[in-house]
Length: 436
Image (cartoon, rainbow, N blue to C red):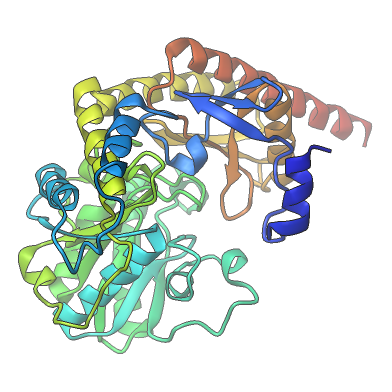
């Protein structure tokens, strides 16, 4: 056992995860992670979809290092900071529609809570509608709007005034081959949720444009358009949670752009600063003006070093056309995986946008979730030097979310390893079933 792993066991609280991967990471560059022994891994999880511009991005790190020598902290909501102001201006430029003013925080959960607060202040209403199978963070407030019992157990009771609508999860719906019909059904159900499961005091509806922890669920194309029509009829704000799907992950800067809908508030984190701790929610002028002195603050929010890194990160995105790269590489990977799906019944569905890809595994025609098989495939990939994620409400979805700078050669190698691992596990399942 390495000294680092022993110290983790003795001094770091890790009991909330099944197991910490038995690797001590020493360095990383692009899509490659290296452990202390010098072994290399192709990272197809990007630190849970964070380092979209690649590990150790030189442009981002240079901006952070230069800022460190000038100013590390100044309480950016008490004083003015140039990096904070410049990033806020840039965020307004890349945001969809009329979203203009940003509040900077430290984590996605903190930004989500701020977005809910400003929505309530603006509307004068108090209830929130979220989606089943959603995930919005691990604070008490964000767990209150998370639609997954597995994430919430032993933490309740949670906040009142929360209602949940069905997730736009067409694969397991009554109409898996007619996703737009299912989306219309979901919009109708949202109307019913407002009528029957709330007090008519709804401030906001919050949704991930692509549901990450829920299993890379991609809503049908008409879903958000029809949902927004319902929300507008009732004067309910739409909060787009782009903590995981933002910053090129889906082939556009923000995933909601795929749907042609303008949210009222958009929340970002993870990929915003390529690993430096930063988050934000961005909204329209009139919504932002709902805050009054004393309503909100963050000691470390808008940290100059993190903001300088984020600004350089966005510039790198634009210079390297990372959104286009994500879209192109994602189409290629999905096509390869769908070809494998046609050969292996264990693959129930391959879905995704850009380099946010989910492979749902099933045991049989009844779509019984293959959770143990997903874990086995991840372990096999790990042994072969490829890091992937496993998620979904039923823990049966393989998650591929590599840095967007992953090279074609690295992507091919990772897909070769993944295909081999899925095939190996599928063959083992078939052999066991044949002996039964």
